[in-house]
Length: 278
Image (cartoon, rainbow, N blue to C red; front, side):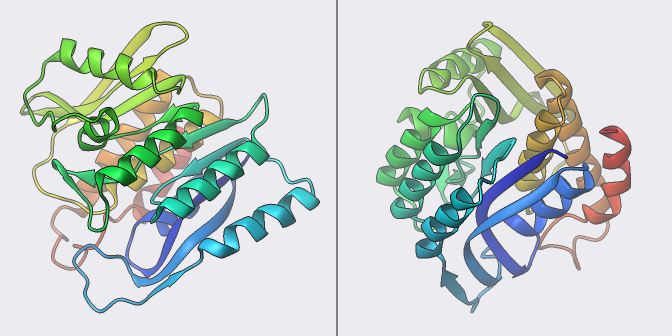
């Protein structure tokens, strides 16, 4: 059985990070391991008064124990990291567990819609850039891509050539493959474009552009893409699976936004994901 370890926070209630990654990866027939970077009573998107317990200092001890029992992983997938210290510790984890045959996948979670998430700064983006240099695959959205490149947010002022140029420059940070999410060339479709720096190939895939904001779709996409790559799907098919599943989850949530505003109803879509990745 293939095995992925994902490193990010966990919310006791709310659909994001590990509460999304673990069931999706498991449903794909992959052993899901985790290193929680923090425990929250709820996620931070729209909730107030939530509790937060930092687990930064537990990460090196978990890593040390795992090395002592010779655990190995087919991929290491990182999501939300909350501090400079966590990025540096995860960088050390990459060094400890990287092999010739596994993948290091970084979702450089920092912001959206042209703005940093609360608590993040340009200095944090510079540190995240260092982690991306060690990755085999990075998964930024348009905001995060601009931050990694140290540029003004691109907004919707782009065409295909602009996106291709951005992908090439992002690959020069060090990763083999760059997958840029949230790309849209018309009002009816949205998807991703990717670039493989070893082959020089670009690829893209689009599905319906659904108006509105839905929590956790980035985590759904990244978890699904990571699982599909580990299962051996090529990048083109892995992207298609991840985009289609994410859109399915959004469509399944439409009409239930009032009671499920805190995340998409991905659980009811898992049987379809299982069929898509057999």
